[in-house]
Image (cartoon, rainbow, N blue to C red; front, side, top):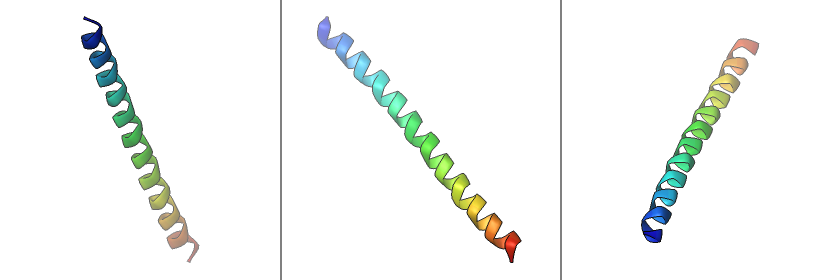
Length: 43
């Protein structure tokens, strides 16, 4: 019983972590795109 609860918690944690990683990747992509855009517009 306890083991199953722990597995559920681990699964939920992994889901949250994956979501966070995806968000971070999106932010990084937006940042690089923004930097590229600003360098293009400053030329």
